[in-house]
Amino acid sequence: MNKIVNLVVRGRGTRQYPADGLLLISSRGDEPPLKMAASSARPGDFLGVTYGAEWATTEAVLPRPPERRPRGNEQAITIPEHLTDELALFLGAYFSEGHTNLSNWTVVITNSVDRVLEQVQRACFATFGLPGRIVHRADKCPGFVVASKRLVEFLTLLGCGGRASEKRVPEVIAGSTREHVIRFLQGAALDAYTCCGTLPRWAICLDSHAGIDDLQDLVTCLGIPNAQIAKWNKDYQKHYYELYASGRDGQVLSQLVPFLEPYKEVRAQEFRKLTSVGRDWSDVIPGLRGTELYDLIPRGQSGRNGVGTGRQRFRYLRDARTRHITRASVLRAAEAGAVLPPWLEHLVESTKRFYPVIGVGDLPMSGRSSAP
Image (cartoon, rainbow, N blue to C red; front, side, top):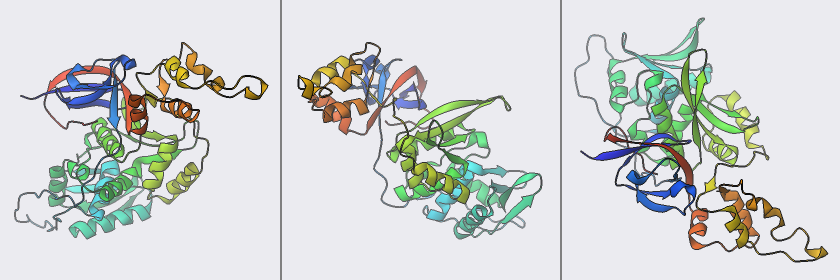
């Protein structure tokens, strides 16, 4: 049986890698990163994660449930052979705000905005030929409801999950085109928001940890740095999981995936206009000491006319408390004339980002594996 390694990575949760797969690892964060087997990773090491990926150029082929005759008054539905824009949106909306009811074979997608529900209804009809209906109740959030055993079977076949805690991104989405992934994310963003406060960010919070992992993989493949955290809800006495892209990265994501709800899009436009979004202190380059980078910066001119030039503004790099150096510091040093060694120049120009490993474990091969 093939072996995998469970790596618990800060900001990325628990991910599975083939034990003999090569990863870019910095030992304890003190050594320049090298390609090593995943099985050699230890807590305290830094793992390199690649942002951006090559997308499929053709529409994903959809699996089909076994053919059978309709039962009783069951409606016949059409299932397309390939993933479409409408289906990608429908699956995204179901991922964030949908559930299935097996007692009456219904699919329900809730939202407080009628315009959104109407868009989901049109997507369902265009894809499956099922009109469904929009329901308003005094004691519940408005929702789009469609009754179809065949549709429930299809969503189950895709691996969507029936309840909030079971939600997964269908593998057919991850293997689709970039355009279809963005359309899926637009539907999934029904549970997302933007914040202009002390930590400006785009974020989405879900009950399903596996679902957040899947969503993080999609955002990572789009080339947008992100992270996830667990948030304790004292009312429900359980953890929910939030995926977020902060600062400039969040602005890029909110631009790429506009909200379907008008009021959210208004807030997102305000978020995109922010010019002060803070620095990303988590984007570190392991294997480099502050004093080493400082010594690469040329000295400034002496005398009154030379005051404030050269290395004066980089003295913080000599502080013994500076353990890891950020990418921004390396870029500023390069602008000041520092000649970077080849390995460092390559890392700064690459799409790799590094995160500390906080736990390691061996498991039999199961589920979905990850590739940084």
